[in-house]
Image (spheres, rainbow, N blue to C red):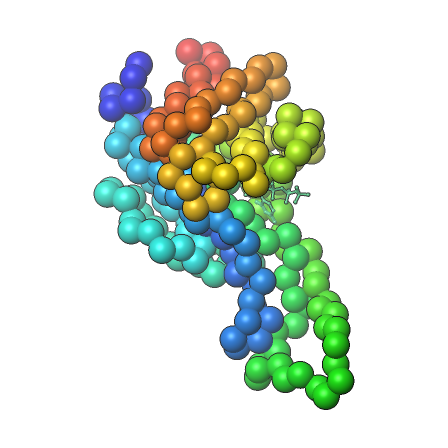
Length: 226
Ligand code: CTP
């Protein structure tokens, strides 16, 4: 089956994409360098292949793909609530770069420097791991797909996350290489599942999205015994 066929018809696909911003005060936040392009490309490809797509988007500058429903969120806590509120789903694809830590408290007014203050220590607390929580949820989608952005030891860290988070498929990309990864329109993915792996790309993110969905479909069919 090739991309363009309606091989995801009637599947309810839930996708998270983009960064999360964790507010420190009314004018500052902690964020990360995700553009959201990979997650949006997957949403677009899945919709074209007939899926009913719900996209939970962090703060990004991207138009909503055709035939995709979108909910915008800002923080990891908001993304967590929005994703859980969309269950049940057939497939969850966690492409968002969720901040791992958030300020314990958001200052209600702008924080000012004190004279002589040369350092600042922020008190941060862990955010919920949306992917791991979904994979352990009573309404677990039958197929849960994660992403891993790694600068080194890509296979080892990605396989570690596959097992620790009890997910079905993980797409790892090496970040910190010029022309690939964040902001770029091209990317390369190493995809791992429990008894296999495949390299995809380098290729435009739209093409990679379809190749990743081909693997998702393979795993779906294996599980469904088809
Ligand atoms: N993820 C999540 N919720 C979090 C953190 C991560 O759902 N609070 C998901 C991401 O959407 C991604 C996967 O977990 O699908 C891996 O994210 P990554 O940042 O690479 O890994 P972490 O689990 O945060 O581990 P580390 O930062 O130690 O590499």
